[in-house]
Image (cartoon, rainbow, N blue to C red):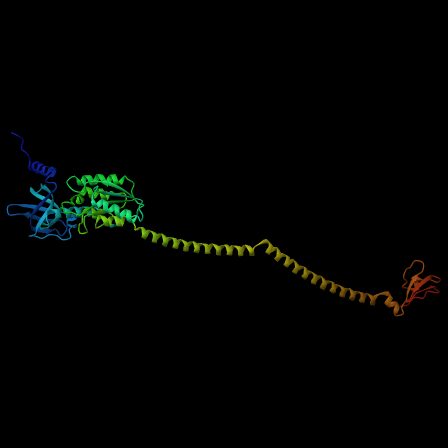
Length: 403
């Protein structure tokens, strides 16, 4: 007899068995919702999925429920996507749901919406990561079916609008079961071709015809593009997952080609406008430079050595004139002072005294001026100087003045 298993052993085995099953880990279930409740605190949703013969418990975590624009209600017939699991603590089989749509939309739409919501949550559709197209790409890589009308239409548009652009075609399947893998391979070959822009293109068709462009692997390959990528898939009303991931969605392949390159006449007009703007900027810059040169020339002229030398010469001339005036005034003052002194000396000179009747008596031999009779005893030879001449005499007697 085999060893008995515990309840936990069986529950764990059932849980691992369900989680490892490839079909039960990714499935769609159609049924009617009942007892749908959203937990107020956690935000998780709990419900039953049932039909006329069976019922399965379900749970949707808060993060998955937040991606739904409208929560379903009890009584709705829905398509639910998720995985089957075994809740060991209660011994319940339940489905962990990550996406719910109305069953009336059909399974294709449900799968489309589920993938769209999941990729959007991962940020593959974020607008802030989308890149602007280059204005004038030198090389464009076309990823499309070879030899079809779509390719010829796009090549015609390129030749008409911008004949100098280089176009490289990377062929791939765009329809059928092998198309997703073919598109992914072609995209990665395009990424190594050195293009400035990539266009993923296909003509219109049914939903099944366009299914390759709603494939998750294709969407992630588009997201990995190192350069801007345009999605030109289907007709105007067709919308695919690649449209949301691409940097730009064109309604048709022909419009994608027109958006990729400018019209030749538009390019000529732009060049003309740029030439006019360049000429204007050059004229403005030249005027500024001329004004700067004139200012510098005036400044240089103002500080030129010749100007400074001329100013110094003028200053020397002015100092010379001032010196000359000062010397003249000084000389005149000295002349007047000298004249005054001469006048004073003339008044005080011996000649003036002699002119008034006085005489100077000297010893005739020694020339000594005699100021006292005692200096001239009798017979002393004398020389008497008068205003007009001299007299020679001898003293007779000396008679001094008595006090």
